Length: 627
Image (tube, rainbow, N blue to C red; front, top):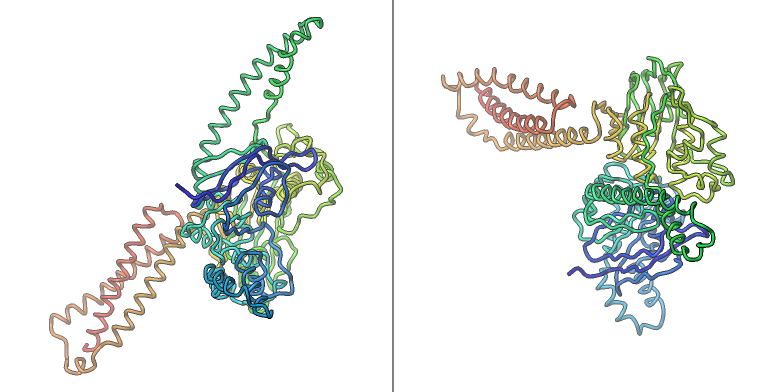
């Protein structure tokens, strides 16, 4: 039986009249990997903060196993700006850093009575090699300058330092709030593999559905202030949640039918019998409440008209851009097609956002120009564009941009109706902006971009801080969008559903134009990496063989035999044929049109060809010495 780590009973949390969740109970045991899902504003981060001891709660209990080591990664980690990366690893409030601080205090004092106890704890928690472990994890997370100041780090680097703080101590239970936010694809996949290999128990909130599906084996969902538990990964959760919603909808339909009958009875009943019928009247109001439950999660497909866009979209002509020694673009040329949906991927620092800002005119290229069509009407969602008057109401923010939005065919939506499509209920629309959660503010910002009815959407990291329900709505919107789209995102699932074409920024101004979605690009890249590794290994093997040749034997031989001469002539014809076949296969692999089975088959054939070419070339070189 799994060891219980945490037990939560009857937990309730509210802010004034707003109840986030009521009377929820659950447990976490050794080996459990739980993903927490809920709409923005439903209390996900609040629940994690309560479990981490950073927020209070109204009712209930939170009980951890004694001596349990728990680590918490906050959504927006904060460190003092004047300390270094390595010093930040000693700033975190965990058992090891507290123990190291206690050890230093004891050593500096005259009283060493507790030293033996502290030394024993240092051994048990492996505190002596803490700094070495910190450097090792930081290096794996591509943070190599340990003396760099925190104030000099990017958002992605800061998140990686915080992540290192969590992983260094090798805790029993790890709590993660949006661990993939600000991480590039390489780091996201590294973390995914690290957590899959480790034996950590974890509870996490994430919008990355591939990450959720591959790392978690259980899903908790907060819905309508209640907690629902599913024993399976994200794919299993989707299936079982649908069954639950359909069952609840059937119950609501039955309640509606009964309500109609009860309403008729309520209208007909004489006032004199009111006392005798009180129980039935009370039941009527309970029934009415049940019938009014909103089971629509907001997944309404929003068919947008989109303003007219001509054939000329934009053309990048001989673009150069660099920052010192860091090259972003070098003689880059591209003609963007009508209705194209492009994704931009790459590691942090390779220039993705800079490219977008140049297109939007916010950053100028060193050389070259962007020629943009006259009919293009941009809608730009930027990473740092979230700026509202906090004292405004949600509905006023949107109405200041447009009172109505044209859907085409004579259909129109008011600002309020548009907000409802993006999960802002009427009562929420009259809230002040400062009352919104971080994810709700992001959702509002998205609404302010879309309600302008653009025909070319440029979205720079739109998935950060958005909940999965909102992401589904945005994905449906983009799939039916009658215009052009460029998306910069580290969300692999989102990219697979939305884009049909990629620009992969690989660093040092190397850009791969790939015709397909992210998963197809990843398969192609894995094959290419394998081929490059095999080519390197073959080159090393060839070098070793050449060095191992005996000069004595070469001198003993004076000329080729008749049989060796025939062999040499055949090799002279065969090697170019093999090289040509290899070149054709490489072109096919780069086309992006092959199925997974064809990719594997052709990559295996290339591997065989490389070995055969190496073998034949070595023999040809050996024979050529005596021609």
